[in-house]
Amino acid sequence: MDDFAARYESARRDVLDELERALGSVDPASLERLKEDILAADQVFFVGVGRVMLSLQCICKRLAHLGVKAHYVGEITEPHLNAEDLLIVGSGSGSSLFPAAIARKARESANCKIVHIGSNPHGEVSAYADYMVRIPVRTKEYLDDEIDSCQPMTTLFEQSLLLLGDVLAKMIIDEKQLDMKALWRYHANME
Image 1 (cartoon, rainbow, N blue to C red):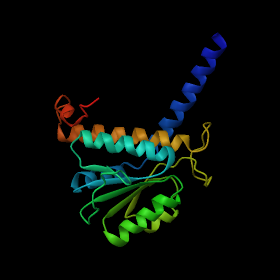
Image 2: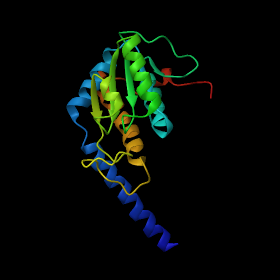
Image 3: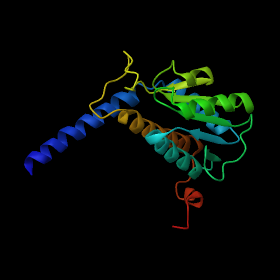
Image 4: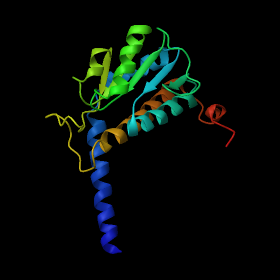
């Protein structure tokens, strides 16, 4: 069991060190711009696939807890997207088929603000995004300036995305001086 404990400690340190490097590499100015756009938007929509989708759904839910009208593209109650809305596209490679197609559709039909959160600034989504919040971690593209990872595939991106959303939520709470107890009025109560 001691061997397992030592391996766990080593793996835990590796993962946390990678997350520290990844989150420390995000440009604060791009994150501040995203925060301002979230707060200015009438509604905020999210789109991604796979584990990125799960991270974005968590961010979407947390923003809803803060009183933001947040939706995930494809949810059964998804409302109409308008020019006053914000679409946040999560894609490490920037070339995932469904998110890129939704970005194109949003640009063509609603001309809303579009933000790409990803690693590759040259992917297909960049043609439609107003700007990018870059988490420069390894993707399937293996770009030279990506932070490498000991974790499989794009795990570091998915983890960083989720934590970046939580950091952003904390910053919104602090800025707006939201009462933490009062936020429970936005939490599901049918559980």
